[in-house]
Length: 341
Image (cartoon, rainbow, N blue to C red; front, side, top):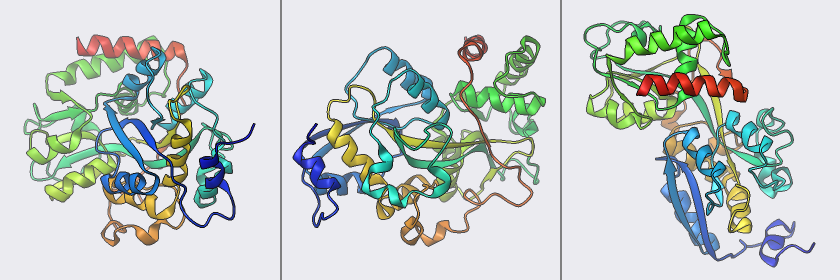
């Protein structure tokens, strides 16, 4: 089938000027994750108006897509969610590895277990899920999850947990020394007991962690490393911790949901974010590594030695988890529902 002229022009090897598109691009992603300057650059380059809606968890995004709610051209799923989306045929196979800017993708992020050969997605950002603590309140250099689950009096009532069932349960399982993707009833009872006991000391279950840390409402929070760095920019006493019991590593990916209204503009966006200069905007704004070779030349120099991007030598290696089975997911949902009711 003959490709539309716009997209054919984009992929022509003799391309000498940016292709000009038109219309709209609807993105569904995390809050405070898309650099405004990158959006502006894309809009000026292609004449496309970008619209962004946000979600607060992967579960929210998945539920919306599974319900049949459409209207989005771009989503930004985590690597474990990618396996679910591909398995349930909720993504468009757009052959990302054939796009011109795929040449810039770092080799370690090419043949990934969640998208072999990069048929469906491109890297957006990657990082870790650890703890952010206010060292004006949490004294010492302890890196144990005990700070979170057996808090000192100064921390009680000032704890924030992510509003993410998998991240919360995985952190509890690590503290208890139990395996992830766990369907053992006794282990999950122990998780619920731990989280229920902790709940009296929890101020909020909120994935927008930066504001809580900066305002001082939270002295300890589960946090993604980029949010922790942005909080430290405004409140220097914030420290990001890589828990000694272990922590989750993750990669968010940019993909196209099945039935996207404007598939061609979605492809333009995905090729666009693999350009090193554009990928650097993601790192500079969201404070996460991006997986694109050559982007370091455009990344703010102040980020080079940031502890949030460079784990200490004694920190455990990040654990990149696969999606759990549907049966385990149901068990986790039961734990989560009981916890929050």
